[in-house]
Image 1 (cartoon, one colour):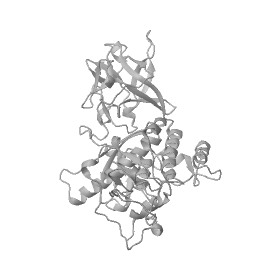
Image 2 (tube, rainbow, N blue to C red; image 1 turned 90 degrees about the vertical axis):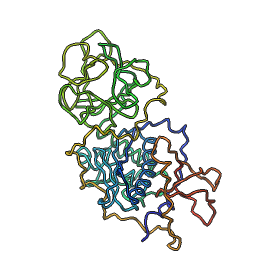
Image 3 (cartoon, helix red, strand yellow; image 1 turned 120 degrees about the vertical axis):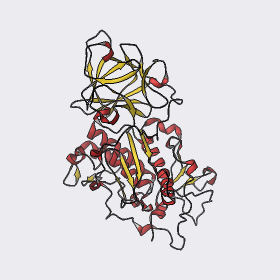
Image 4 (cartoon, rainbow, N blue to C red; image 1 turned 30 degrees about the vertical axis):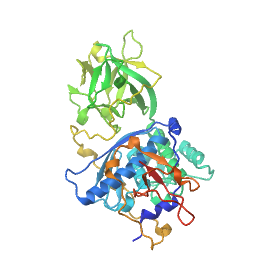
Length: 434
């Protein structure tokens, strides 16, 4: 049966120089959860999923300011692929859906597209009812007649609801930028401040350790640099980002005395804080109230603990703003670390009613010559996968093969290798360098 393997024919090539990354700084990360003793089928799926997720995450982090920690699973029982707003993303056993556009589409679901009440409130009678979003769509596409349509699960155009929708590099980029703008409109998320958060009790700052613990340490350390983002407007809450993780109350606990830690951002109330002004003679002095538990962060020795509020210095924190971003290359890379201390909240299971529409099967009208079937044996080298921070994307222009990297991958994660591209071959391919 013909499949998405031929989709590489209809997608344009990428040229993402590092210098172009400056205009966006996304914080999307993921962990692929694997079996302790994987079967051959699972090993193959893991390689494919890693390759496409690395590339999809790279695109989101290049063209958006979105932050999300995504738990990725290989679940053979899933017909296509599915995701929910709590950050769970599952690929089924059908390899046709282990492609970059599908991964990006499902990442959109984790950002709230088709999976949140805010989205459903905005989607009325098949049209996305937000004038700013409609204007943004026309700005991105350059078409004054474009209108963003929607249903309970999907948006179009640029929803990537089928991989066959990808006709050019621009389609993938617009998808990311549109999801970013919709997310901002729905959840009113924005950058607030950056710098350090210092305890008035001991003049130490919140910092992240090499094993991802949250500790109070010397404020001169790079590990204490934080970025703070605001969410919503009634009330406004904030999350505090340290590297690729945020200040987190483990297991979403509402109990007093629980030690705060760090975890990938999933948007939960246990990761967001209400900033209450402290009546002291110190600028930017605050109480940090957890939005879920209602408790306040307290400095206890070198730890940060949530407890009922008291009017003492160990409950008061000062934001020391710093406009410059330090070199954090030596801080922990928490992109894909699974925190086994956190249990899963069963109330946040994936809503399978909000998954890819299985009636939307692959567009096989644009497939390769069936006499030249795809070589499915050429998959990603698992020894070179798994670190999305080191994935780059390259474009080959005008058949200048010398620009091609040593190992390149198409939309399906197949290793293309050093193949010259002549008139009898397709030059429009998405190629991912690793």
